Image (cartoon, rainbow, N blue to C red; front, top):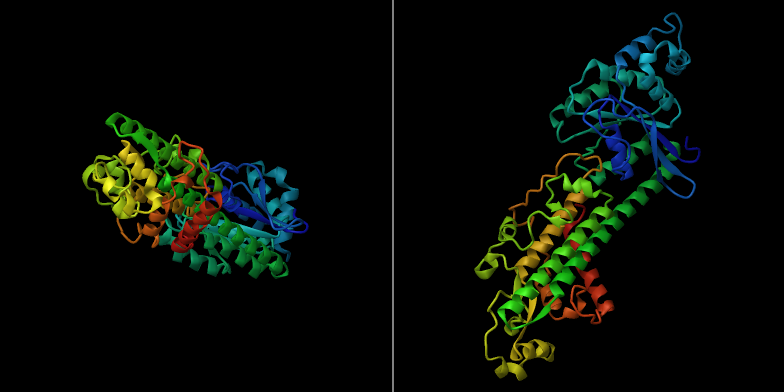
Length: 464
């Protein structure tokens, strides 16, 4: 038991989501075993969340109460002619537990109740209220410990929510919380700790320190994720490959560029998964379009562009995904094949020095291959979608992620400074780590640009 911190027993009927709750709070998809069949957890398992150097919040997962009706019948049969409290009934049963070998799992739960500071009673809202649940709550009251009913699967069990609230109130349980292990909301997690503050007034300051710490960690994780996405955008927007102005050379450079960006996007996805402490297997078994370190729907597919509601035209509709050279009249924006007109020599002295290399390449029969804006938009929206899913995914989720790209233009909205970022990126091809040469990346300016992009991303998404 936590002498300086807090300890919580996580209890409930079999298959109510106790281990799932533990996984989500601990951010540990490997904790325990989650399965559809009842009675998966057979032993007491624990995990801890550090508060400071000397305090932690310890959580103990317990086996399901598989026969609470029989246990309640036995407990209520003790001391029928005497006035004793619930704790005495529990100790009396545990002293004689060998007489009831079929209730071995229940005995493990009772010992855990008596040795912890507080109880999370996990309720599967998908289930209607039955007598066994009322018996479980009565048994919990015998331990004389604060109890917080945790209403799980709130989305799937929404129709039973009011009924459960009324039943809990009738049994004098008013400090419940709603928490969906699958459709995770960080704000719901904080509410659990705030309810603990209400019931454990002597630990209020300690729990507040813990709440503050969790909020900081969540914010830092989101900020780190935004930097990962911003880094991918800048690498992809700034990259350019030089090719001799022949169809074969351009095709080869295009293939190399596409593969470099695909690899960079896969690396970004892996880094986001690791940051949010999800397993690769969690993604492969879902509808999230990441498979074997790549996206199921290729970034350069015309279908992919259309899925994100982006209007296609010309060669972009063929899935090319890249632009050739630099259009001087568009301040460095790239377009599809064949968009750079002739007569470059005539304007050589009328443009900024910045475009000298591109102009010289044109004259010498070379081209620079870049990602076009349409593909960059899709690249950006894919990362935002993935980040949003990870922010809202509980670590207990075993269901496939419903990856439906919204056709709502507001939900697929690009950042307000998108055009500005693109112009800046086109002006600094040396900022991309995807380039083939070893040119100086101008790291300081590049980092400032990453910070600018990630900060706007955080402001735009808010608490997703």
